[in-house]
Length: 180
Image (cartoon, rainbow, N blue to C red; front, side):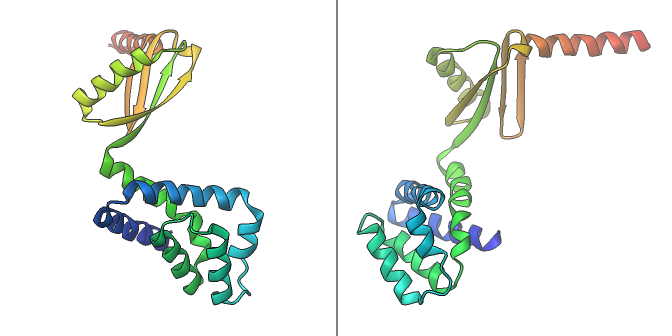
Protein backbone atom coordinates (compact mmCIF):
# COMPACT_ATOMS: atom_id res chain seq x y z
CA UNK A 1 0.00 0.00 0.00
CA UNK A 2 1.85 3.00 -1.36
CA UNK A 3 0.12 5.64 0.78
CA UNK A 4 1.04 3.81 4.00
CA UNK A 5 4.65 3.59 2.87
CA UNK A 6 4.73 7.33 2.21
CA UNK A 7 3.38 8.10 5.67
CA UNK A 8 5.98 5.76 7.17
CA UNK A 9 8.77 7.46 5.21
CA UNK A 10 7.60 10.88 6.37
CA UNK A 11 7.52 9.67 9.98
CA UNK A 12 11.03 8.26 9.65
CA UNK A 13 12.31 11.59 8.36
CA UNK A 14 10.53 13.45 11.14
CA UNK A 15 11.74 10.93 13.72
CA UNK A 16 15.32 11.46 12.60
CA UNK A 17 14.98 15.24 12.72
CA UNK A 18 13.35 15.20 16.15
CA UNK A 19 15.38 12.32 17.63
CA UNK A 20 12.23 10.24 18.07
CA UNK A 21 12.80 7.23 15.81
CA UNK A 22 12.48 4.76 18.68
CA UNK A 23 9.49 6.54 20.25
CA UNK A 24 7.61 6.51 16.95
CA UNK A 25 8.47 2.83 16.46
CA UNK A 26 7.11 1.89 19.89
CA UNK A 27 3.98 4.00 19.56
CA UNK A 28 3.13 2.77 16.07
CA UNK A 29 3.26 -0.83 17.25
CA UNK A 30 1.30 0.07 20.35
CA UNK A 31 -1.26 1.54 17.97
CA UNK A 32 -1.29 -1.67 15.95
CA UNK A 33 -1.94 -3.71 19.11
CA UNK A 34 -4.77 -1.35 20.04
CA UNK A 35 -6.35 -1.84 16.62
CA UNK A 36 -6.07 -5.61 17.00
CA UNK A 37 -7.42 -5.79 20.53
CA UNK A 38 -9.45 -2.74 21.51
CA UNK A 39 -13.07 -2.65 20.39
CA UNK A 40 -13.65 0.82 21.85
CA UNK A 41 -10.88 2.30 19.69
CA UNK A 42 -12.06 0.42 16.61
CA UNK A 43 -15.62 1.62 17.09
CA UNK A 44 -14.35 5.19 16.97
CA UNK A 45 -11.59 4.77 14.40
CA UNK A 46 -13.48 2.86 11.74
CA UNK A 47 -16.76 4.80 12.01
CA UNK A 48 -16.75 6.61 8.68
CA UNK A 49 -20.04 8.36 9.40
CA UNK A 50 -18.74 10.15 12.49
CA UNK A 51 -17.86 13.79 11.93
CA UNK A 52 -14.14 14.31 11.62
CA UNK A 53 -14.02 16.85 14.42
CA UNK A 54 -15.87 14.51 16.77
CA UNK A 55 -13.62 11.59 15.84
CA UNK A 56 -10.49 13.65 16.51
CA UNK A 57 -11.82 14.70 19.90
CA UNK A 58 -12.73 11.14 20.85
CA UNK A 59 -9.32 9.85 19.73
CA UNK A 60 -7.62 12.53 21.81
CA UNK A 61 -9.69 11.57 24.85
CA UNK A 62 -9.05 7.87 24.20
CA UNK A 63 -5.28 8.36 24.47
CA UNK A 64 -5.49 10.98 27.20
CA UNK A 65 -2.07 12.48 26.52
CA UNK A 66 -0.38 9.06 26.44
CA UNK A 67 0.70 9.52 22.83
CA UNK A 68 3.36 11.61 21.14
CA UNK A 69 1.94 14.75 19.57
CA UNK A 70 3.39 13.83 16.16
CA UNK A 71 1.66 10.45 16.21
CA UNK A 72 -1.57 12.12 17.31
CA UNK A 73 -1.20 14.55 14.40
CA UNK A 74 -0.71 11.58 12.08
CA UNK A 75 -4.01 10.18 13.33
CA UNK A 76 -5.68 13.52 12.74
CA UNK A 77 -4.26 13.67 9.22
CA UNK A 78 -5.53 10.17 8.45
CA UNK A 79 -8.96 11.19 9.74
CA UNK A 80 -8.96 14.36 7.62
CA UNK A 81 -7.99 12.42 4.50
CA UNK A 82 -10.40 9.56 5.34
CA UNK A 83 -7.52 7.11 5.24
CA UNK A 84 -8.14 5.41 8.56
CA UNK A 85 -7.71 1.95 7.09
CA UNK A 86 -4.04 2.45 6.24
CA UNK A 87 -3.09 2.94 9.89
CA UNK A 88 -2.78 -0.85 10.15
CA UNK A 89 -0.06 -0.86 7.45
CA UNK A 90 2.05 2.11 8.51
CA UNK A 91 3.85 0.34 11.41
CA UNK A 92 5.17 -2.40 9.14
CA UNK A 93 6.56 0.00 6.55
CA UNK A 94 8.05 2.05 9.37
CA UNK A 95 9.69 -1.07 10.85
CA UNK A 96 11.20 -2.00 7.50
CA UNK A 97 12.85 1.40 7.10
CA UNK A 98 13.73 1.71 10.80
CA UNK A 99 15.48 -1.67 10.80
CA UNK A 100 17.67 -0.62 7.88
CA UNK A 101 18.63 2.61 9.62
CA UNK A 102 19.57 1.06 12.96
CA UNK A 103 20.98 -2.16 11.48
CA UNK A 104 18.40 -4.58 12.86
CA UNK A 105 18.29 -7.91 11.06
CA UNK A 106 15.97 -10.81 11.81
CA UNK A 107 18.09 -13.95 11.81
CA UNK A 108 16.42 -17.33 11.81
CA UNK A 109 18.66 -19.83 13.59
CA UNK A 110 17.80 -23.45 12.92
CA UNK A 111 19.41 -26.01 15.20
CA UNK A 112 18.87 -29.66 16.07
CA UNK A 113 18.85 -28.94 19.82
CA UNK A 114 18.31 -25.91 22.06
CA UNK A 115 21.26 -23.50 22.24
CA UNK A 116 22.31 -21.02 24.89
CA UNK A 117 23.02 -17.31 24.81
CA UNK A 118 26.76 -18.01 24.62
CA UNK A 119 26.28 -19.61 21.19
CA UNK A 120 24.05 -16.74 20.07
CA UNK A 121 26.74 -14.27 21.17
CA UNK A 122 29.31 -16.10 19.04
CA UNK A 123 26.92 -16.11 16.08
CA UNK A 124 26.33 -12.39 16.61
CA UNK A 125 30.06 -11.64 16.50
CA UNK A 126 30.48 -13.81 13.40
CA UNK A 127 27.56 -12.09 11.63
CA UNK A 128 29.08 -8.67 12.35
CA UNK A 129 32.51 -9.72 11.10
CA UNK A 130 31.35 -11.65 8.03
CA UNK A 131 28.22 -9.72 6.95
CA UNK A 132 28.24 -6.44 8.88
CA UNK A 133 25.07 -7.33 10.80
CA UNK A 134 25.02 -4.93 13.75
CA UNK A 135 21.86 -5.85 15.63
CA UNK A 136 20.72 -9.40 14.95
CA UNK A 137 17.33 -10.40 16.35
CA UNK A 138 17.47 -14.14 16.70
CA UNK A 139 14.52 -16.39 16.04
CA UNK A 140 15.64 -19.82 17.18
CA UNK A 141 13.88 -22.89 15.80
CA UNK A 142 14.65 -26.46 16.74
CA UNK A 143 14.51 -28.85 13.79
CA UNK A 144 15.86 -32.31 14.54
CA UNK A 145 15.95 -33.15 10.82
CA UNK A 146 19.15 -31.11 10.38
CA UNK A 147 20.80 -33.74 12.64
CA UNK A 148 23.41 -31.34 14.03
CA UNK A 149 25.17 -28.08 13.31
CA UNK A 150 23.36 -24.88 12.49
CA UNK A 151 21.55 -23.13 9.67
CA UNK A 152 21.12 -19.34 9.46
CA UNK A 153 18.61 -17.47 7.30
CA UNK A 154 18.66 -13.67 7.01
CA UNK A 155 18.37 -10.98 4.32
CA UNK A 156 17.86 -13.61 1.61
CA UNK A 157 21.10 -15.30 2.69
CA UNK A 158 21.30 -18.93 3.76
CA UNK A 159 24.29 -20.21 5.68
CA UNK A 160 24.00 -23.96 6.03
CA UNK A 161 26.51 -25.50 8.42
CA UNK A 162 24.25 -28.40 9.34
CA UNK A 163 25.08 -32.08 9.07
CA UNK A 164 22.06 -32.56 6.82
CA UNK A 165 23.34 -29.78 4.55
CA UNK A 166 26.78 -31.39 4.35
CA UNK A 167 25.24 -34.79 3.57
CA UNK A 168 23.06 -33.25 0.85
CA UNK A 169 26.12 -31.61 -0.72
CA UNK A 170 28.02 -34.89 -0.64
CA UNK A 171 25.07 -36.68 -2.25
CA UNK A 172 24.96 -34.10 -5.07
CA UNK A 173 28.70 -34.50 -5.69
CA UNK A 174 28.40 -38.28 -5.76
CA UNK A 175 25.54 -38.06 -8.25
CA UNK A 176 27.69 -35.83 -10.48
CA UNK A 177 30.55 -38.33 -10.33
CA UNK A 178 28.21 -41.23 -11.09
CA UNK A 179 26.84 -39.42 -14.14
CA UNK A 180 30.32 -38.76 -15.55
